[in-house]
Length: 80
Image 1 (cartoon, one colour):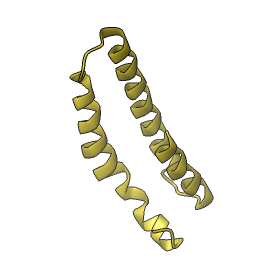
Image 2 (cartoon, helix red, strand yellow):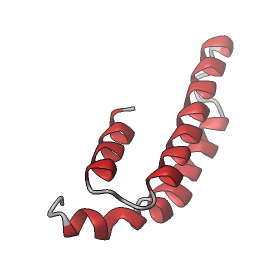
Image 3 (spheres, helix red, strand yellow):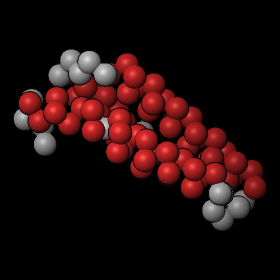
Image 4 (cartoon, one colour):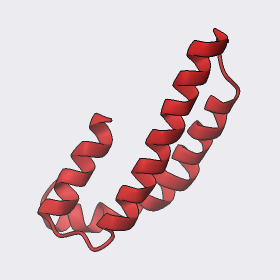
């Protein structure tokens, strides 16, 4: 996912201390997204209910918690 790859590139460039933990979270979310995509293809369901779970996790856990951990690092390096 381009969004995750971009974040990870800058985390590595700025030596962000939480890189490993954050990358693992990206891997988990990517795996969930792939599983949902595969389930969608198999069932032809218009909106798989499991997509709501991944969106909730992404918004509540990843974006509001995990992504906020690197904001200071990125700002210090003048990446806004």
